[in-house]
Image (cartoon, rainbow, N blue to C red; front, top):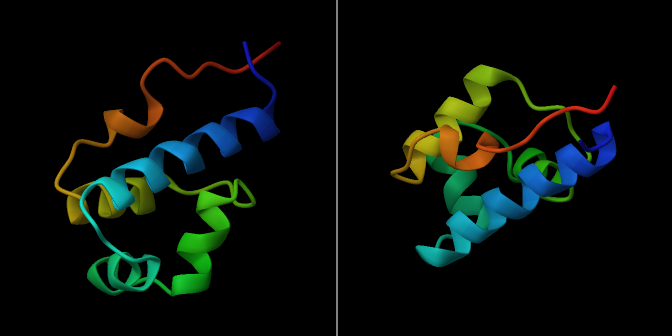
Length: 77
């Protein structure tokens, strides 16, 4: 079990890993999703509690499934 901050940071790490693995900049990823670069940056730093539709948009832009970012994550009591 993880606390909320840990979950957000882990999500951000997973997002950054997927993005860099395919050689995209934050700016390019944001453009593909219709988001602002600073939003993507803050998600990668674990500063935002991202909405489901944004998770799906990011996953789609990265050519992966949304489960890539949330598999195995669970919330503490």
